[in-house]
Length: 262
Image (cartoon, rainbow, N blue to C red):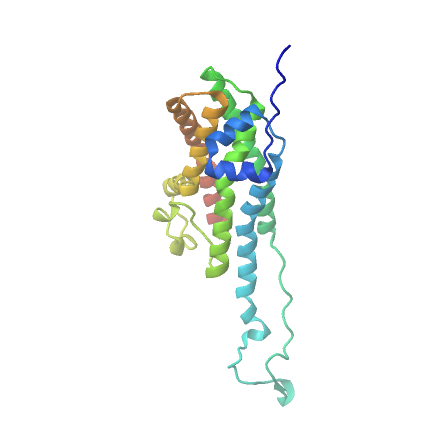
């Protein structure tokens, strides 16, 4: 008689999330042996955390515009003389209606929601093609799920940026190392040249969370496909470089368009 098979070890979503941060190699190996359909939960978490900085930036902008209402009067402002010699006391002027989100804010929100799944699809397809080329294919679906799980560092980045924007009341204009190329104090007046826009587009992707993300992709690729570390590092590095170079063209076109509309 054949021995009964061992029961499949089940891990909760919290265990999988914590495992990606603490023990990514063992967690990805578990996901390889026991595929989970709960990948969509971290996907929703990542999208929400990515949207938070944008929403908080808009809230801080509206909050900072509050003192300018009622004709710009402050508690120290003297009373004003109205028509007919009447005294207009502070607070009696009609308050301006709060402005809703602009069309640009709506486009940014929709763009973030749509672009994130497309990014995972592109990365999943690229990882699948790389694994096929290297002779260790694991299928497109596992590679897509790997891309989702490996994107959790960006959820942490979204939370960190949200706290920073809310405390300081300042928007993050140049992300990553882009500030070393473009000066945020002058970029609103003078549009940088194409070469600076291209370099800023690439450097804007580089930060500690990006390195964390790439490290998880390498570890996951090794766990899912049994690739050697060197080949996994080369595959992930080449894919990132290709996508970074492809993002240069939209960055240059966006900068040229903004200069025309100023």
